[in-house]
Image (cartoon, rainbow, N blue to C red; front, top):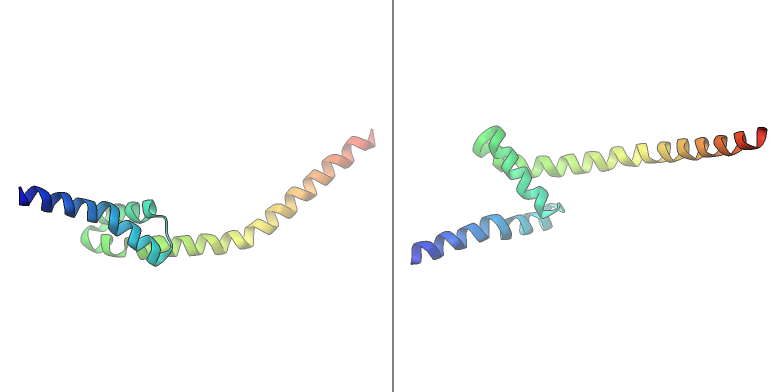
Length: 92
């Protein structure tokens, strides 16, 4: 009975508690923490599981910085396109 309780506790800790705690530490969604550990372990074994969370955090930071650069350009392009389309309606 104690073995079953130990295994159940370990599973809850590994699959629920650890992702939540790590998510708060690196400001990642707990689902992404779990996915990054699983993908890292699948790609590079134990070492991949260890570096999976920092790599996921790095990807999140880099993508946020890239989005800060791209978003204003995209919004400017969208507003230029919408103004051009409105002007074309009045040319007829």
